Amino acid sequence: MSTTAPRKMGLTMATMLVAGNMIGTGVFLLPANLATVGSISSVGWVIATAGAIALGLVFARLSQINPQPGGPYAYARDTFGNYVGFVSNYAYWFGNWIGNVAIALVVTGYLSHLWPWLEGIYPRLGFTLAVIWLLSLANARGARWSARWRPARCCWR
Image 1 (cartoon, rainbow, N blue to C red):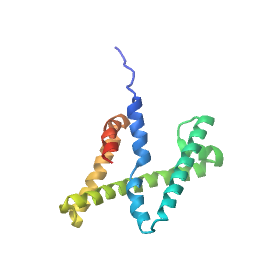
Image 2 (image 1 turned 90 degrees about the horizontal axis):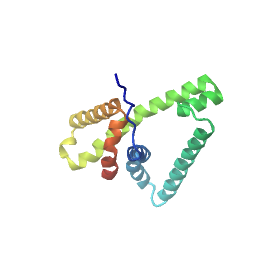
Image 3 (image 1 turned 30 degrees about the horizontal axis):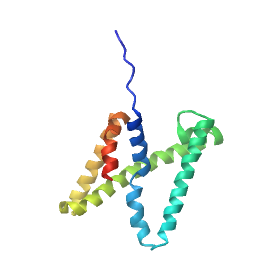
Image 4 (image 1 turned 90 degrees about the vertical axis):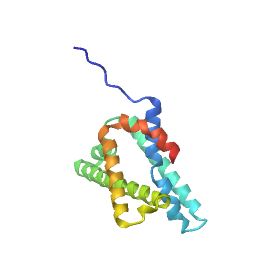
């Protein structure tokens, strides 16, 4: 009986997965939200960029100092105790749920400009639910399967 080693993601797949997660739908949502403010919105872009870079550097440094699975949950648990670790993980979990719905709503909102049949409430609801289920299927299939589609999605954005 021969056992084969599990296949791992290559550099290209991992890069596209990380790039897609970093870009996210915020690239689509932020201009619409900041457009109502006016030209000062460029300051908002600078602040958001600085915050994202700072957060990335913090987690990069934490992973060098104390490499362990669990990410923010593990760091909060080790520093502040089990309760704060649990709360941070719970907030992250809910944030992902809300983020997934936001992604589906953004996709539906943008496509409704291309496809007029998405203007009605029921078609919009059905399409949004279909996007959520497709993203859930992609998540259930695993990171390697999802990463295969990242280059196309990054270029499509």
